[in-house]
Amino acid sequence: MKAFRLLEQLEQMGITTITGVPDSTLKQFCDGIQTYKGNLRHYVTVNEGAAVGMAIGSYLATSRPACVYMQNSGIGNAVNPLASLANRDVYGIPMLFIVGWRGEPGIKDEPQHVFQGKITCELFDTLSVPYRVIDKDTTDTELDEILAEAEGTLKQGDQFAVIVKKGTFDKAESFVWENGSSMIREEALGHILQNLPGDAVVVSTTGKISRELYEQSEKIYGNHDNIFMTVGGMGHASMIALGIAENKRDKKIVCVDGDGAALMHMGALPFIASQQPENFYHIVINNQAHESVGAMPTGCQGTDFAQMARAAGYREAKRLETMEEVKRIGQWIGEKRGPVFWEIPVALDARADLGRPKESARENKEGFMRAIQ
Image (tube, rainbow, N blue to C red; front, side):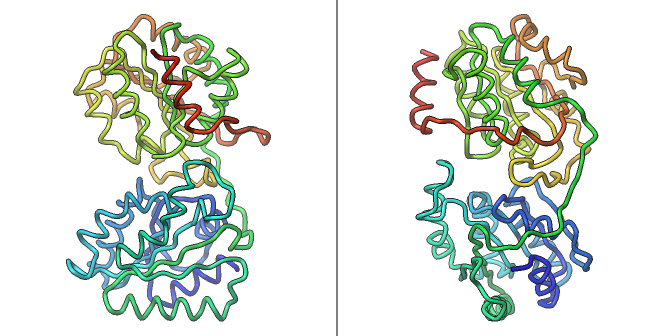
């Protein structure tokens, strides 16, 4: 299936706004959005709930339904505005969802997607949102019928979802974007790990940051016991780290976050600062993109995270522009009282042979809990 064909059909349905959060299952669709020459206005939002909110506002202003795309893990973020605002029992705001199906039953996937994959269709049933599933075998005629059904549902003021299986879309025209930074993320992470104080433990965000920390820790120390890899729940690593910091005050707690993840739940910054945890150190690795799911820009490329952390109330916040500064993070953690924040701008892309944790999520959890006792 060609992504451009679907985008053209969205326009024919009267949709002028498309908004959402990138997904690897939808990579060809997302690439297609970036290179599409039609009249769709496209917005990458900080989370899926925000995308639903923007779709509501777009409809109120234009009387035209919007399209919201996301990975199925983002349904949770979308539930509140969908159920409490858009549903026909409240305001009755039509919108079309395009949802990438990670963790589809019977298809091997990463552990964070398994349960979400099992309940994806059930969630839409519970939300009273009719849906249809498409895959690589869906014909153009079948897609036309599905979208005709969707259009009828939207005209009634309701929502409709198209759930997309892996491999549905043909490769689109490649979308290539560079952020202008040259620092290599994995090299920076290796230097951070190598120079940490002995009493430091790490909580890392989902995606390639955790995968690189895992490999670097195995290379440097022969284990990864002091790292809790938050391989799901995007945007929540910092609050997990705070929960550990508040209960393990004899240890230095280092949260290694991503810019996309930090944006997703930005309210964590002022809350962490308000607690003033003296053993908390927050690092945001900023490549200005959702790299793990296709390298689409976050939509907030100009964000100054260090300035935001200072405004939120962190004791100290700084943007580190050189690898020499990055190498000093371990020393600073040993010397400074938290909460302290460092933003590190890095280039896009990772090693082609970057691996994944060999242990199960449960095994990694148990190893981490033993290590910090």
